[in-house]
Length: 290
Image (tube, rainbow, N blue to C red; front, side, top):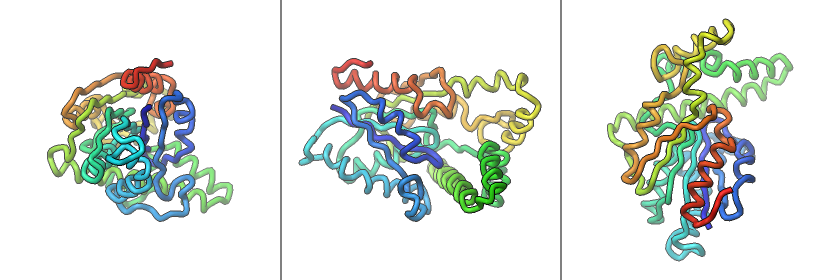
């Protein structure tokens, strides 16, 4: 009765969304976009920028999109968008193209701990370091990924280590540079004609309150992260609450800001997020959930 199109963030692949897709109620079909050079598409070339990746997403998913359009087998059937993390930057790019090419628009949009395109993730220092030395940057920005790369190298698997670093670096840079282009425009380049929900990971936002209780090793890692992230100077968060609230200017309809009892990493497949999204969709379909 309704279709939900999902758009991933940095370094994601289809399998990382599988739990969300298989948990969907029978009246909701979930379609997940997997970028080139990721997952099952690992042998395809990297996109040069986010606009190119959005064009690929449109082309890959076009057969499904066309079923909603005039003359399609489910003409006028409702559909929704869902993103996670920096994948929120996809939403307006895809919606803009759908409206221009097929004259269709989503019924509702969900940004799952996902900032809009006019919010940077990195500080200027962080961006410069990423461009200069990706490995050193990830030692500060995402220490867990750097340790994973170190382990692969120690085991002699330099090919996998290089591939992992490239996957994170290329995606992060692609999304970050797109945000700079959007911010330079000054205004949102697309307005959704539907309700827009931003679901914020409360546990991640509240982590700042407990920083003094972290171990010295973790605090040392977070101090390095503060220098490369784009929220406040003394914050290790990628985005703060004000950043998420900037979504309000991207819709002509109602805007909903809600904080859920989740952290960022778990938000992708969290039952809490599933309940929120599918309950909202159920209301549109006249169904009940769960």
